[in-house]
Amino acid sequence: CAMILRRLSQSIKEQNWMAIGIEFVLLIAGVFLGIQVANWNAERHESAKQAVYLERLHTDVIGIRERMLEHFQIYSAQVEGADYLLKLVRASDAEFKNIVVDKDKVARSIAAVLPVRIPPSVPATYSEMMSEGQLSSIKNLELRDALAAYDRLSGVALQASRNVTDFKYAQDPVLIRHVVINTVVDESKLSRINDEVISFDIVAMRKDPEFATTISLLRRNGLNSWQQRKLQMQLVEQILALLEQERIK
Image (cartoon, rainbow, N blue to C red; front, side):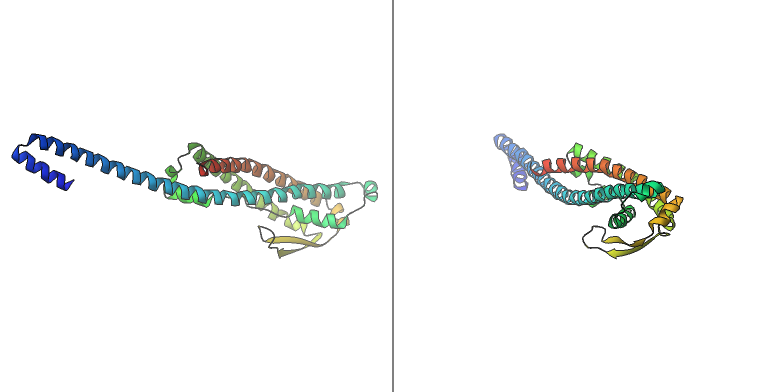
């Protein structure tokens, strides 16, 4: 462009109008091409940045999905375990005489009602993009809306989880009256811990009205948490489907 400008200046001095016209056209063409190349480079950079964000989001959401699946197993077992314990402690003396108590199942059921799990938060990459003002890098508006919806729902689930956790800790004294529990490290679980029931007193459980009430309330909390995770999982599956669409483009 600098060379064209020098030639154009010289042509103006010499009043070479044909040369002026040619140089002017070349100058405009050079500026236009320069802008186009700059825009192309910017678009290529933006596309590359979006691809990195999408890949990281996909990894994050896959991890969230794995945690959700573990939570489904935990809360399903919690409800099933509570149902079995309530059957035993609420049975009349006459009914209880005819029940064959499965001690291993009782121990598993007690262990099952104990866990409390914090719901998965938003993808770390989404939080990073929010803090850096980079959400516009996600061009798919449906994907962006789904991530925002998951963010809002996660906030609600987290608050509910705090309430459930507070309630569970408040009920621990009732549980440990009749149960001896040992918490151990279990690398097979995402939580890395597991509650082992060492011993229990089923007769004392049946005589303690607070025990049945506590198990009933823990069952309700487990069921509520289970339903919340289902709502979160619906959004997780939607987000994964949208991410897959973007990855194959």
